[in-house]
Length: 196
Image (cartoon, rainbow, N blue to C red; front, side, top):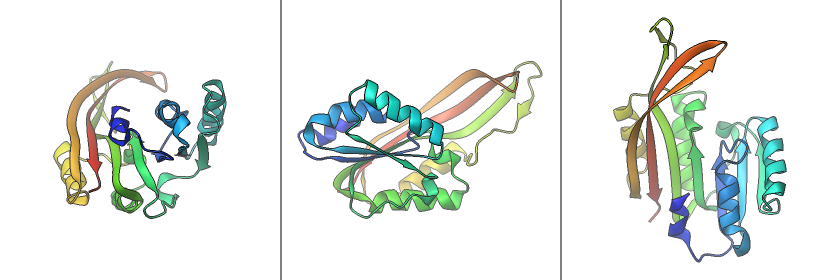
């Protein structure tokens, strides 16, 4: 998480990882802030992921820095003006609805301190294609906006914040789901903004 460099030298950083999973992002973040008295709050719907995160956080020596919260992202209360850094990587597109998506973005905004960063990676224009049939399948994601609409939504919500990084990467993966080979294509949007 290179964007943490923006907060270099600060003490007692409060970090929120929405959709943390087993800690792919939260553990490296915790390692970076562990000597400054900060905390990484990790929110995930899957209890099994949070249990693994607790195990991994012990293995990586950051158990004291990590707090786990079992909750759907859209149900998690983000207290106003609490966090220096909020990260959500490939998780917001799994919220129940576009309305919940916008609600969470606004909660993230209000929950961020002045000078704080929101770092999002959101997939857009997701396509799934059966490799054997070359047939387009229904993408197994709750929110699948066209890239332009997703960018517009993010820019609208964060209009008064400073954009630090906006990047769109076209990605393609071959995966196996229910015994079938599938090509998953997406435009992954990295959107990093700072509250001024």
